[in-house]
Length: 263
Image 1: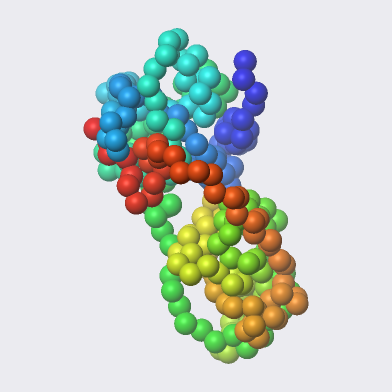
Image 2 (image 1 turned 60 degrees about the vertical axis):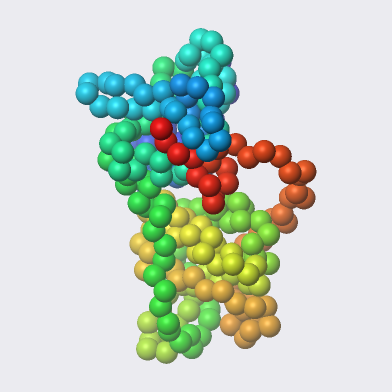
């Protein structure tokens, strides 16, 4: 028997309270963020992959497992697979009328996810924050934000190592009197703004917090607003990037500029 995984834990929390939207969102977040092993008909050919397709009660599903040994236990013999992030698989299945079978029969997180839910997940992951222009008159310490959002931000930003010097969450007052919160990324790497904004947006979405409660901005450390955020805000340290390994052939789906092709 394999150890309990993060997906098992999130699934158990969801099943324990099916009316709890936050628990359901956290399960889908774990599914999107984790690496999944997709059962294939044959070994990948470049970026082309051919998932095993199963039909249950008239609906089509592909099968994934969050551990290699779970896939092996299900199949009972050596079988080809592709290791892909859950978000990549969601994008592959979106609009294909194909659902997802997760850890079927081999783990407590065994579940069938219908095609429409996979399309919803893909759409949710593809959404980004709207760009707005507003003038900030005051920066204050953050107040009143739920702990679930702080935890979600901490987890999301831990995967953004090397994309910015740090992030800082503060309260803000706009010139028109509106109040809110601002997550400021300090000294972002050129071209990383979209990825950082997406991570912040996902933390909001999957924590169940209304998007209107937090804006996102990008600043250099010498700007007055950055200095104010660093002085009174809640700081998130982004981990240092891991030293690059020697170049190796990329598995299907691991290169965002060359996603796998579903055959």
